[in-house]
Image (tube, rainbow, N blue to C red; front, side):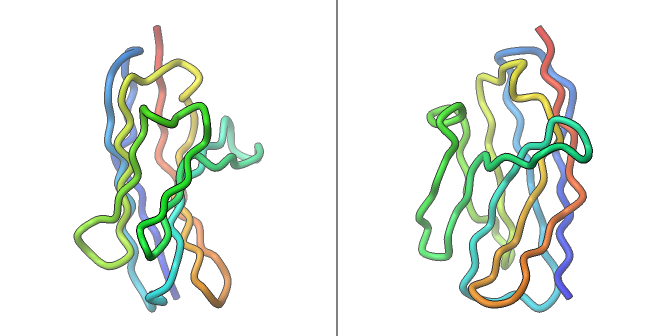
Length: 117
């Protein structure tokens, strides 16, 4: 069973930077996609922020392109999200998602990011 734990969320001012981290444990399939999603409130739709495939290919939401950078961490399955020039609209719960090439995806519980002006 795979487990994900996010960290790094905080309350910051507009223009600030944060780095979110997601650590993964369990039986990880080598070929996978790791993604960061944002949810305004619990129970609301989860929207893709950024994703990175096993081959390093990345995908970003247009609102964060150029401000956020997703990268693989040092340990297997780990993924980071470097967020710069944060805006109020970036506020939300950031969840990490592990999508293996086969099998069911797994979600973390999320970390809260609050950006105020």
